[in-house]
Image (cartoon, rainbow, N blue to C red):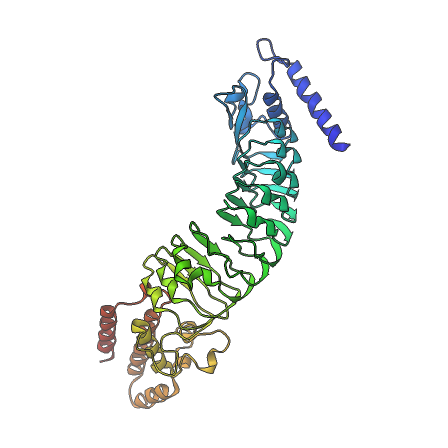
Length: 453
């Protein structure tokens, strides 16, 4: 009843405003339904006569109003409302649902409040709906999924929407990009979203979603910062030739990484476009597949803070486009971390050897039982507690040698040990492309020798 009264007042307001039009302007009888709908929309905004809405008056044809575009074929029918970052405040008018020719609505980047009007579901021609970066509340209308069958892009990012994800969104056959990050959505992911065969991007990050990933979902490219748990379906990525990004960090996933991500060559060939893979801060187990080295476009690879083990594949060195890699806080048997130093670890292995010799500790030392690696141990203590990380035998030897020598000699030898540790750290960078070259290592060793002598 309250809604009906509000619409009645809006109707009276619009009629009265047209009744007072100056001579020569469009009369209320000549005003089109689309113009009236736009005026209703303006009437619900705070300070609508200011800024970019200043052109929204009777002296200008509504098809020339800022943010409004009309059809060339059907004149005086509004086809797009592009008002991103117009500094609008107020509520979204339900009368926008009367703009029946609308194909695109972009009201993102404003200060709109209230709920998403159910009447937007009347826009059966709508292909793009962007309401991101506002202050909208309430639930996502179920009617959107039931009626907007041509919708390709839906962005509700950074609002305060609550409730569950409507299962009806799975009834949008053309949907390619569904973004609902940074809201207050709860509940589980509807299994029916697996029916969106055209979906390329699904962003649900920073909500309060819970439960396991439905096995029906074959495309989950950006599931991060939620409260998801369970294991990832084994075939989740096996039929995704266009997939470029997988973000599942900061969840509670456990079990092995799906084989379809990289362990089977035929599956790797289906992920040739993959550039970003973030599985960090979960509880994944198992080892890294060597076939990850075939993902030539990989630019970011994060699996830190998991429970993974085994060797780090040398094939990761083939990823020439890789700019960011995080493997820390796992139980990887890196080069030099076994009972004998690996002869295949080249630069990394040499760096580990340096750190072992200076610290007197092996990477498998019990000191590193809480997720701390030998490299991190050295890195954390290098500048503040240098003498604490130098091995006991080396420390005693240094002390005995310097007993009868001046303090400057002792400092020079200590500085050389610090430089040697720095060189070891440079050789053990996680990203192969960031490690020192053989030539630079030799130069560094000569410099240390020269300083010592």
